[in-house]
Each structure stands twice: as structure tokens, then as C-alpha cells.
Image (cartoon, rainbow, N blue to C red; front, side):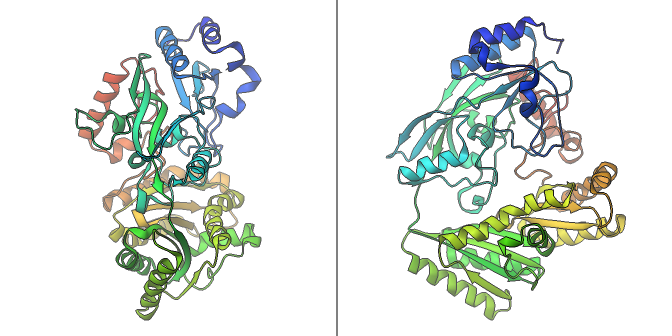
Length: 474
């Protein structure tokens, strides 16, 4: 991209209004990622309010050869939605596009614009008598457009799938500024290539998602949560199999947390009163939903836990007595990430492994890292139900965490990702590639796959206008 002429800022202001083009000191929150790991410098931030304005902004930037960085709630973890350091990129913020367009009760769908906050969508669905099941730690500030652009996962993937499975249609502005209206809400449409699935997970590199039609589900008659102590990951995997057998489609969440991760929560947030964490190496958080009744759900749940106890699979278990207790247990799980921040800089990994191989993977990775870095600490937790582990590394005690990460992050990640590849896993389960994993992807993705991806990028965005330097290197 050539250096943009100052006229582009005036052109954008004429499209969206001068008050919706930010420059200078107004840019700080748009230029830094949520983790504080990346900070860029934007030419400006443009905030369109309609799909037509997005299309005209993209057309103007394409004509001027100015690159655009689409941004939603800016809660991503791989630096995929902040500008580079050139000062030549325009951040395209979709936050003003937050309208509810339609709820179709009979079709069980909801259509919202890209800037709609995830928690607001959950509430809107609830008020209409439905469930929208996507649930993440950042749901109070992340947006639907960003969720879809990164194919977000969360805590209920085991039952409802990732964001891709929850999406029935999209509205997208192409790199040329044309609008594709794919908001049909159809569950069956075999009329060629699936453009929806192409744009979901593309991290803003192929087009700008401006609206989506999403699946709704009936609200469950009952929802129960249990906190279970197990001695090993093998037992956690065995318990998962028992949960599938006893609870079937009622199993909606199955989270695993190691003792050190829960110890961090207990250390930094003692008021949360973490249960059972000192008794065993791992704890499991299980959620079951039932369409019949709470009594039916509780009966199945207790039957499963009793069988697991008799077989020596679990050491202890607590079933939440009400929604308040269930919320408190989930709050402990969601506080692990915040407790890591309190403990200091750490190296994060969002990996997926075939569930049956996760215990072996953890043993192998733990051993390799412990041999390389004496005293290293493991913050392991995640969505065991779908094979997604957040395998994070804390510096040894007594060592400056920031300095440790700065000096050793690449080596730590190389060990982790090499072990992931040995067990036929993925180096990104739900966070995406962004900029942080850009240089790692060619080492863990086949040349054929990368060539196909480049062909798609070149075909849809030949001038590399949309989010360059993300997912694929220039």
C-alpha cells in the first residue's frame, strides 16, 4: 500500500459525517489490543452507521489504495483487529452498526448487525422466549461481527457448535465495496460454494461482515451445573464419555481446570471460594440442559455422578442448588484469565487436540517445557468437551514475568506447537491467527492448504486492502 493522501480522511468524513471520523488523541482505545501485546498507529478511525456507508468507505479506500482494519469490540487475543505501526491504515469500526433487524419466531432466527454486543443478543433472545447459546468471557463487550470473523467458540460448543454452526446467513461488503446479501436464514441451500462459511473465520481479510442471521433455540426447561474433582486428565476424559452416555444431547458444557489455574483464582480472588481445588490435580465444570424438567435433569445428573464415583473416576462432586450457585461456579472458571493477568505476563496458547490424546499431549508438553525451563508453571484449562485446551505458561516464581515472556516466548511456543503437531492438533482452536501467530502458521499448515488460502485471498482481495498482514503474510 502506498502512503495515503490526506484527502482520504476528508472523503471518509463526507461519507459518514465528520463526527464519525476520529483522529489524533481519540484513537488510543482502537490502536491497542485487549491484552496490551500490540499497539499500532492508525491514520484515522471511521465509524459507519449503515451497510451503504461501509460499502462507500471500502470503495473510497480501495480507490486510494488505503488498507482497512475491520474492528468490532476489539477483544481478540491474537492482535488481529488493531492497525500496524505505519500510521497509514484506516480502522473500520463497526460498533455503531448495532441494530436488531428481525426476529423470526417460526424460523427460529434472529438477524442483527455486526456491532451488536453478544450479551445484548443473549438478552434479546431470552426476552423473545429463545436461547442464543454462544457464551464467552468477553460477551459483555465483544460483537457478533467479531465473533463470526474469528469463528468464536466458548463454553457451549460441545452442544451447539462454534459461531459458524450458529450462523445461517451473512451480509458482507466485499473488498471492491459491493454488498452480498446472504441473509436468507435457510438451513438448506445447495446452490454452489458456501460463501457464508468462507467469510466466517476469515478475520476480516476477505470481506467486512455487516449483519448476520443466527440460529435460535428453545429455552431449556432446566439447567444444572456440577463441580467435580478428578485426579487426572485421563479420568476427566473418562468422565466426559460417561457424561455423553448418560446425558446425551443434554450435555452443554464440559470444562477442565488444573490445580495451579484454580490456585491463581484462589490467590487473587479469595472471595470467590474455589471449591475442591486443593484435593485433586484437576477439577471439571459440567453443565446439563434438559427440555423436560429439573427433576428429570437432576436424576440423570446424579445417576451419572454416582456411577462415576462407584467406578473411582471422580473423587468428589458438588451440584449447584440454584442458578446463583451455578453462576458463581462459572464465574470462578471465567476468572482464571483475569487471575493470570494479576499474576503477571504469561504465554498463552489456544490449541485443539483429539480428546482421546489430550492427556498424552499435556504430559509430553509439560515434560518438554520443564526440561527447558526449570520451575515453569502451567495454567491449563479449557473446553475439554470439544478438545480445546488453553495451555498457558507462567514464569517460574521469583523471575520477572515480563522479562521471561520477552526472552522466551518464541521458544516456549515452538515447543508447545511442535507437540501439538505431533498429536495432530491445531495451533488455534478458537482465537484465530491474527498477527501474533502469523509467522507460526507456515510451520504447521501444509503448503497445499496455504496455497489454496492465498488463491482465495488474491481472488477476493487482489489489492490486499482488507486487514493485510493477518492470517496470511504479504
